[in-house]
Length: 142
Length: 216
Image (cartoon, rainbow over the protein chains, first blue to last red):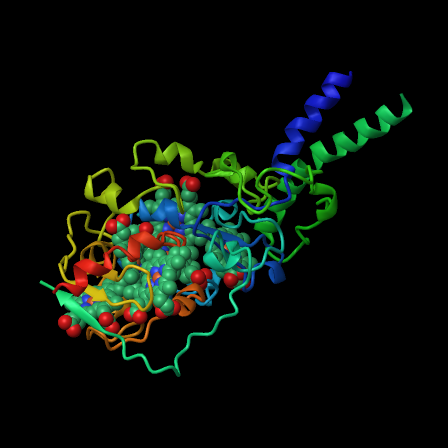
């Protein structure tokens, strides 16, 4: 009985660890999801960069380098924009697999996981010293 | 015994709550607006395990927590069925060249050694990037080694328009770059510290000994 209990506690305990150790560069996207009663979206960079170079998404498909910066709506996605350029049943599985994209813990805010600003022990307060005279030197190596 | 029973029922509630929630997820899927997904989720406070107050490293992440499978990573919802269908990073990274930072993968070497061949074009698996082999040295004030910015590893992943002119004007020395800006996510920090290797890896950028440069 007691050992069963302990077992239950252990199996439950693992995913219950409060701290987030998400994979570096996982992006949580939540501009609209929570407000519409869906779990937020998790976009895994590591998984996609094994299959595509950055250029495909950030130049050809026009994704901005900004978490939450692309105001994506499901209607855009089913019309073949954003994630829908690939998640169309041809290049990758189609949008009816809601749970694969909408997989974040409820109400998580938009964020990039493991980003420097998230992992710094102390927050960055230093401002770039733009005003200072320091014509940067640079040269090209042949 | 009574307390044991109370604990057991609490445990059972906890066991079934995620399942109930997963079902709810399906309903939400069918009628996007229906139920708040938060129901049945224990409040965050209960989830925090008691930690010893004097561990050796208080502020650093424990190594055993690197590359966790999605249900245990703290951002994916273990109460969502789909979460369990996602690939655990370790399964994918097996043959990749390891590193001590970021994804724990050295993406430059993994690509150069042909362990992966990500598409350069969404549809055409044969399209190849035009790699530009142009190195730029940024002379750094103070004792830190100078920065060598190599176009080659960048143009294997990115196209010129990703950086020029939105982030950098293409002229050696024209751009004001500082560490503070990088840490705040500007300049090199648009990518480094978010998706490309993190800013903690000083030597990857500050790779030129001062003497070597001043001799030229």
